[in-house]
Image (cartoon, rainbow, N blue to C red; front, side, top):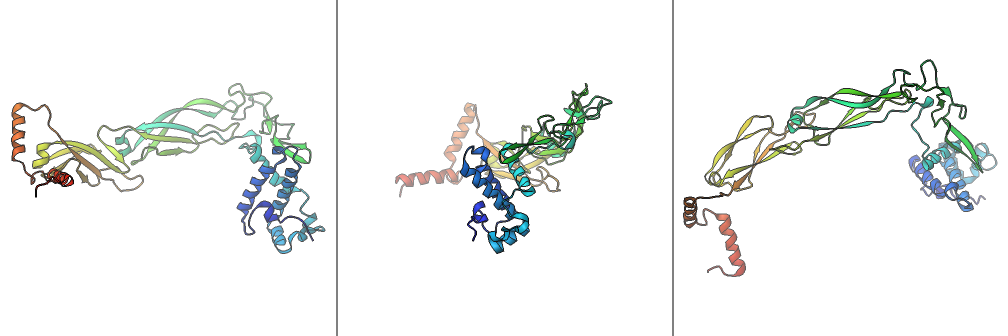
Length: 376
């Protein structure tokens, strides 16, 4: 009877764990018990081998089915091609994955040293009116483009890059380290797989040069602060003929003198006189489309009241909907009064009653109730 530990227990997963859970558990444990992280620790080395053996069985659909039915006996005496303890091609694959996680060896280089160009960011500030209408903007940016002299190869005209003799063009080399064979980026070609003996004088072997480029950016109506526009393939050119990166335009909206934005709605504050608030009236306000609209103020309007003007806000991005415009009135207290004005206001105060200022009268009535001083 086998005394081996259950493979599911070894990987610390349930028996119904899916492939993603298995892989995640394997990587976590393999990184924890890797011999390079635990030098001289025999227990970690044994645990590491157990983890790899368990994963090699459970990641294979057929082997896992056999294990679930027969247990370890399914792989004894030559079952499934010689048992699970031997580290074959499958182990090399899983070990390569974890090695890349441990030491960051997973790169973006392709054969021949071709690397994708970097993505670029461009910050653009626009006005609220431009965000309302949309616009086409012209921008100039310094970007790396494919070198014309060498057509992006990095080699001097008339020559070609040669296959790296150290890695045979693979970009990676293997090195024996005790029980294991480790794979790492080739130090000779830095993972490119090719060597340039005679570099292009225009680009110094990188296959790209810096140039000023003028681009046209279409800004649709309704964009908000922080909107990102992607221009595919307009980033830096790839190294030695690799694909270019992308350009991302990040939009920010300049502060407006009159409006504040809240999504698709616009807000503004308008001061009105005490007389207009008391007797009623109307006033004109501008809209974002540079037109005018009237706001009617009913008699007795209090400071802070908002008036909604439908469909006079911002357009909703990529739709036909429009936001609303909200006008908040603020009753302005008179200042620098003449003696005559003061006398008139004092006379008005004497003639006033709770009916003309109900909120004030109600508040102070509650104050008197609180202190118990209200007359019976």
